[in-house]
Length: 152
Image 1 (spheres, rainbow, N blue to C red):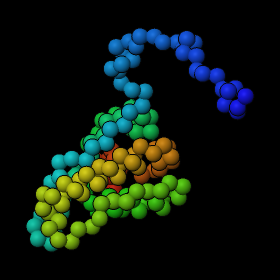
Image 2 (cartoon, rainbow, N blue to C red; image 1 turned 45 degrees about the horizontal axis):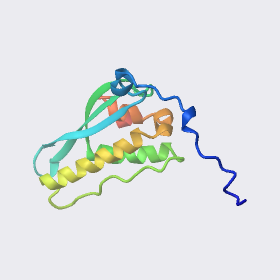
Image 3 (cartoon, helix red, strand yellow; image 1 turned 90 degrees about the horizontal axis):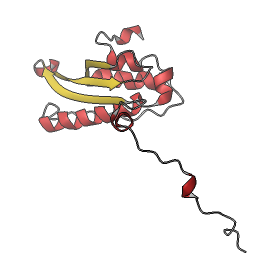
């Protein structure tokens, strides 16, 4: 008898199969979090030109104050946010932001690439359970239209 012969095959007859209800199939998940970065808008002229992005958040996670929210943030605010998360959360590895761009930074391709990177970044940090429960800046950055970094 070899060492694997003692392993019994899984007995599927003991599994309780039941038909899912429509609510179970299509209802709101127990916990969901959707973060979307969209609608980039470029403001100003010359050296004072910048682009901001809309952050749309839909969720039913208790740590978030609002179930639906929409705010606008600049790339420089994301940079501050990333640095603040790193200072605040030494146990969590904070992902990188899309890199700084020095030429053609207002071209559609560059703005779209940055938008995608900012969205990935936010989805990762907002979805992290330690940050959801332990960060003082995560929810305000994502949801507060009057967010002011000087308060943190």
